[in-house]
Length: 369
Image (cartoon, rainbow, N blue to C red; front, side):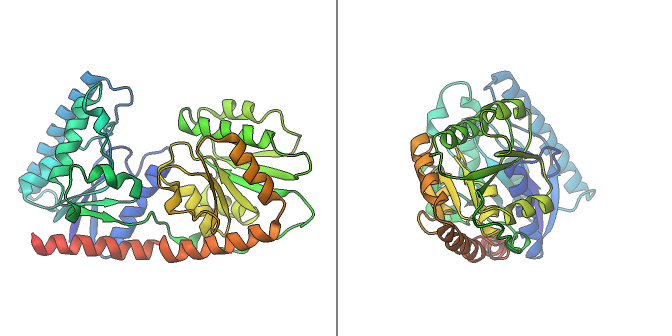
């Protein structure tokens, strides 16, 4: 079976790393793991961050032209005709202007992974895109949600029979490795992984810096920050007041180097302001680290509070600082919690299991078609 794959928010080969790009790539890998042929059928970025109405109209027109060109190529035999169109990540800022047209014309199932529906956008600058999202959701034959928090609003426009939950996933075995114990009398080694950009990411870094500033003087710790981006200077200023050597900026690291940092750490911390679910959080758990995070979006679907880590109210600096102070005093608890986190990642969030679940959904659509 051949899949036409499209990620309108960020193509799988976009040069800037992000959790969204990673999830798109993992979906492609999961589809291939089940034996599907996957074609990247479009690379148009449809995101309009500022609600510019003219740009939304122009992108819709361009999407229509690209859809028409694809259809000509499919019908002429220049491109192999897909059996299913599969779009990853739809929301009001990034509609799919291509897939619904192609799927409808070819008479093939249209599938979405990770979609959100925001009724409050029915009026205002994103109204046109919101309407397009609603029509796309109604057309979809299956919607795979990676975040249970999105499903309540999706139920307003989609039948329950179309909605499927698949937990976010990674190749868990790639992150498992030897834990470096180190000096038990030394500082507790905290680590975080996040891009440095404005908005929610910078807000999370601000919460983290403020929480660390409130820690009691008798709590010994260090923090390694993995990540880079346009807001790096702003992030560095947030952490400028700490003791020399307490904060280490590792910069943007490849997967191999990131794994080593995780294996050498005792706990992962991230405030998770407006986080969908957090791929870095999932990778940290797969590496055997307990997680302290803000209870945002689908984070609670990855971190089981009090079992595989600890959740605090999003943006609550005193709560985050208090939780950090308590866990910094108990290394044995950190190790035991990290082991549970690793087991949960392997049981619930491995790509092999996700591949089987997604394949089951698609196979049923193929039988209906």
